[in-house]
Amino acid sequence: MALDERTLAVIEAFYDAALDETLWRSALQQVTDLSGSLGASFWVLDGVDTPRLSTFVTINFDPVAIKEYVEHTAAIDPTVQYLAAHADVPIVHDGLVISEADKDKHPYYDWHERRIDTRFRVVGQAQLAPAVQAGIALHRTRKAGRFERGDLDQFAVLHRHLERALKIAVRIGSLEAVTGFAKEWLDRCTAAVFLLDNRKHVVFCNRAAEALQSNGDGVRFSAQRISLARREDESKLQSLIERALSRSGSQHGGTMRAQRPSGKQPFGIFVSPLAREYPTLSMFRPVVCVIVSDPDRRPSLPIQRLQESFALTEAEARLAVLLANGEDLRRAAEQLKITYGTARTRLAQIFQKTDTRRQTELVRLMLTTSLAP
Image 1 (cartoon, rainbow, N blue to C red):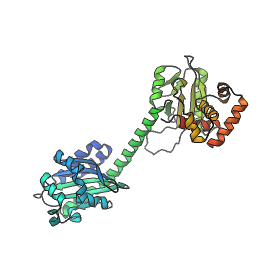
Image 2: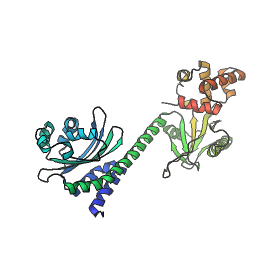
Image 3: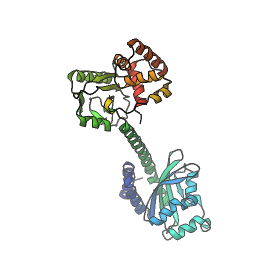
Image 4: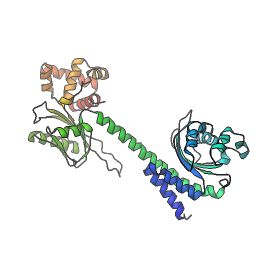
């Protein structure tokens, strides 16, 4: 069936709103005009035992009445109850829900007649997740009349695109939520975190990394690369990054220490490869993670947390923390005032308790635990 320009414009508006949720009002206005309706709403219904309208955007309705509806009256609305019980029904109209005679006796419609000047409604919906559904409702007055067969057929054409647009919106919204959570979590870390793509370009850095840059104490980065001031350290860092890019040698990355021009304690640096399976159209493709730990910014490290998480003794936990902060085993032994042989024995015990087999694998695990907010 050929679609006229107004119908195509409504379909385009649905997809625009899927990409930018602030455009749902515009989409509602267009579909309202096309369908000869008085007003419309975009809604999200969630919950199992007590369904609720977590999102409710309207046009051409009194905001005070809509607030009263969402907060109180929606719970007794027969259409809301029907939608909650029939999430698999794509298009719902008054005839499926309640007769005209029963409307006149129902308390919801008594409120509706007094507060909202509409009588007839048609709803298109999609189930987006267990106990989560969303859709659009169109409303007509008594004078405009009910939604007849031709109106429902037209709405069915629109609904196919509405359903796709809603599913696109869910995927985009979920991705943005996960991205926001990940950024917030990384920004809470006291260690500087850099994510590099396959050209060694920095595609993400957290707040601690930006602070590290402003200190100007041996770590520099731009969109093109991360580098160290001291030539020997720079060479080793780039070698670790190259190894992570090629996944040669250890599959779990490598560690190093980097001297600082200020003479303060060296940075501990951990370089690790990342998963490389990304969607075809993803523009965000980090393949290497570089973590720089600054001993001067180190908080009270969670010795007790390590003990509880992995059943380590206090002595073992202290050794694990030093290794996670970039110390090699010999220097860690010196700081703990134990022999190198004793340190090796403790490291073997730590490997057994943490189910790791090599130091770089242990460091990754310790960083996950010790850097958590």
